[in-house]
Length: 131
Image (cartoon, rainbow, N blue to C red; front, side):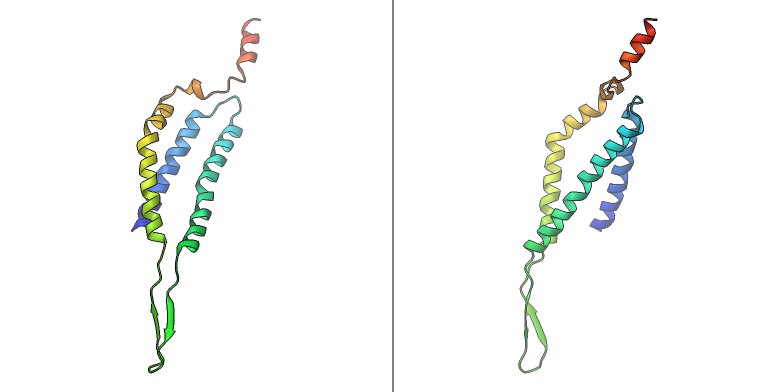
């Protein structure tokens, strides 16, 4: 269930992110800026997965298995899987991030398009207007 919800939310986030980037991209530098924004977003979304997988491996405790001398069956006991506790911790951290940074993100999203521009073409436009 959590994987299905994650996939749906991930797709919605990707669409919103690309819409935001496309709306804010500076025409003066065009596709280069869009590529930079997308690359930064991709890096921000991929390297945490490597860290999480490493932590799952380090924090998980394998069960101890013994062979029963009478029946020859293998009996395993103990062990601890770290995935679900980590999912809970990181979900709480995500909710805290939204709580504390949500207003700042909403403020950034309401900035006018001009606030996102580099104004690299302004000098050329001003010199042409003066002619």
